[in-house]
Each structure stands twice: as structure tokens, then as C-alpha cells.
Length: 547
Image (cartoon, rainbow, N blue to C red):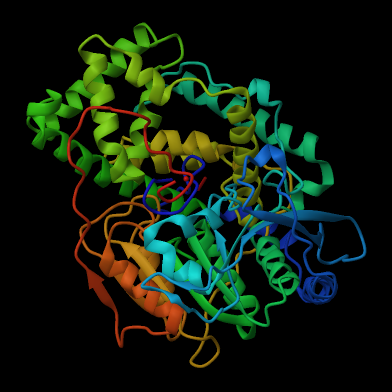
């Protein structure tokens, strides 16, 4: 999801609604819910087995293209925690041991603090590359003290990869991106969503129902045990914060330290339908920030000196691409998707602005490079990530099963937030036609003394995980402290260019130190305008990137 902060982003993360939870989904949710006692016993059994087996670290899978310095192993977990002796799957784990070298004094050895386990979000993103952040200056002190551990969650290749369709069919042709779609267009997209949901059910079979956030949290407990850690030190970003919150609710006595970076609203009534509409509304504000930045640099990009003029030029580009896709691959939807990524990360702003400017001036190549076709390998990875994202969110909670509900809520929202609203609908609409039973979201809440103090990090104008989610989580986890990057909107703030944020992160992870009360940091500087030169920063790794 960005160059400076550490996540993978696999398309939109969430959607959210302004209305009450759909009544038609209630019985379905109840049917998919169990008391959890069997799963709790199964988790204990799996954790005991994992602790006894440990992890045999060796060479990483070649397909993951990881450096030789990184070591990988596998952890076996039950597909269904209610039946720990039934089918099992293997999760791939990566690790770089703590360097134990003080960055400020190479002759001094730093005491080790065990493993720091990281989840980058999505759902559907892999954390296997995470240990590489130890090479980044902002992470040197943390990498000295901790073994940096990443993993591919269940369903994410190579951990029992999930697939909803042939990757060859996942390639998206140039599409329109209507902000006021016609009835015929809605009908066509609804049919596609239903077919996609059917494909998930047919390709995954009975296993599909076991890909959800509660099982992801249980998997994390088994990974902890396999690493030989008595208590877990964990950092979750984006969707990873929801995973961490569930872990804190299920296994509070197993928590050592937790960092929540860019927080999903964990209110059970928000998971996931309402959260996604909240996201669409927030992206409208972030799109406005980006347009204002482009307008302030009209001398560089020539796209207009007001946000309104920039909007007109964006719409002009969309009309041209609808008439003739750039390079035969980039239509209005691909343009919108490319600019949506700029809503996640400020580092994309100069590159996206330059590509839009160049296209309108007659040079489509930068836009084609940034928004065009993927390689076969990239397409397979994107299909897998999309499958996991869909399965987890659809399985996690009730969704409206009547398209009329989606149509009503999003038509209303699109009047004031047209930029992402309908694109977010098409991403999540398979959940309206989902065949697997639904879980009932946990009411995450810990009282005084039940959980060690935790650190919450958030950017005030984050669109992917709106700031209200951080406030909600802080109120639910007793003893948590919130550090806010004021006026900033980059999704994921840990380990980026903000020294104030990083100071709080280091103090907490290295010494357990937290501010006495909520704190704030001045925003990072806005990016400098510059033409495209060299490769566009990739979001998969911090300074080196799913939900």
C-alpha cells in the first residue's frame, strides 16, 4: 500500500453503510455461529502441537522471490478449529533474526526481545516480505532487538492458496467507471458478482467457510506457540488491526505488546458493510486533498489551478479513455483505480499527477505503465488476494442479500462521495450472493488489567481506515494510547518519514513506554512535485505494499 509505511494493499479494504444492519441477514449470521467452545479447545490442541513441533526454518519458496538472507518455515493449523484432528493446512512463515547490534554503537550488543509478528492487512495480503524492513534506517533499532517475523495468512499463497476463478479470467478489460450507473449497468455488475460468488463456492468447496477473521486470529495464536513465544508481540496494519483486536479479545493473557496501525473500526455493527461505506465517504475527502495539491502545483502539471478545474481534467481523461483505451488496456476504471491508490499514499501523488498530465498532453505511456496490464505472475497474485479478501469479508458478518439495499444506500452516498462509492460496491457485492455460512462479529472489549497497554497509530485523514476506527478501538481496549498524525492521510504511519511517530513506536516496542495520555504528531511534509523519473514507488514494502 505504500512506499513509506509497511503494508500490502489489495484493492479497496472496506465499505460502509449509513443504515441499520440488514434484517434479512440475521438468521444467516446466527446459523453460521457456534458457541466457540469447540474452536477454543481446538486452538489449544493446535497450539500445543505447534509448540512441540516448533518451526524448522530453511530456504524460502522460490516463487516468493525472497532474498537468501531470509529464512522460511511452515506452521500446521486445522482448517476447522472445531475439528483439530481433521484436515490441516500449512502457513508459511518468514523470519530474519534480531541483529543484536546497536545502530548507535556497533560495539554494544542489544538484548533480544523475541519475535515481532506482523500482519499487513488486506485481508488477502502476504506479510512474508516484512522482515526486510530491518534494512530500512527507521527500523534498525527495532530490528536489533526483535526477530522480525512475517507470514502468509490462510488462503494467501503459498499458505493453502484460495482461488475463486481461473487467473486467466481475472484480467480486467478496459471498463467504464460511472458515478451514476444506469440500471442496465447495475444489473450487469450484479450478475458478475453473483457469478464470482458462485465460483468461490465451486472452486473452494466446503473449505470456503473456514476462511474468516476468527480463524485468522486462532492461526496467529498457533504461530505464536510455534515460535516458542510465551506471549505475543504483534503489529497489525489496516485489516491487521482488526485481526489484532480479535486476538486481544480471544487471548488477552497471551498478549505482550500490540501495535495497531491505521485502524479498522471494530464495532460489530460496522463489520463489514458499514465500514465500507464509511471508507467511500472518506476517500472523497482524500481525493479532494489530492486535487488541491495538484492545483497548488499547476505550474508543474498544467491540470488547473483549482480543485474544480483538476476534476474537469480528470473527467476529460475519462471520456477520452472511454472512447479509446490507452494502449488498449487503460479505460476509465483503470484510471480511477490508479488515482485511488494515490488516496492511500502521498508518495504516489507526483507520479499519478504526472501520468494524468502527460496523457492529456498526448503521451499515454506513463499512464499505461502505472495503470496497465499485469504480468501473468502478478495477475495470479492479484486473483489470489482478491479471493481471500472476498472470502474473509463475506464470511465474517451479515451482508444485505437484496441488491435494492445496496442500490439505495450507495445511490444516496454517491451524491456526495462519487469518486469511490460504486467501485467499492462492485468489489464487495459478491457478499450479497455468498453461499457459505456467516460468522457473528465479536464485541471486542477489554476491561482494566485484562490486557497490557497497547499502542494505536492513526493518520487523521486516512481514507482506507477512517480515523473514527482508531477512536473506537481506543475506547474498547482499556489502557490503550492513541498517537495521531495530524492533518495527514497516508495509510500506515509506522516506520515512515515521521520521526515523532517512530519515536513513539520505538519507545513502546523497545521499552514498553507509552505517553501518559493520547498524543499527536505534526504531519509529514507533503510530497514535492516532480515528473516521473525511474520506477514508481511500490506499496508492498516499506522503503523497499493488499486491504
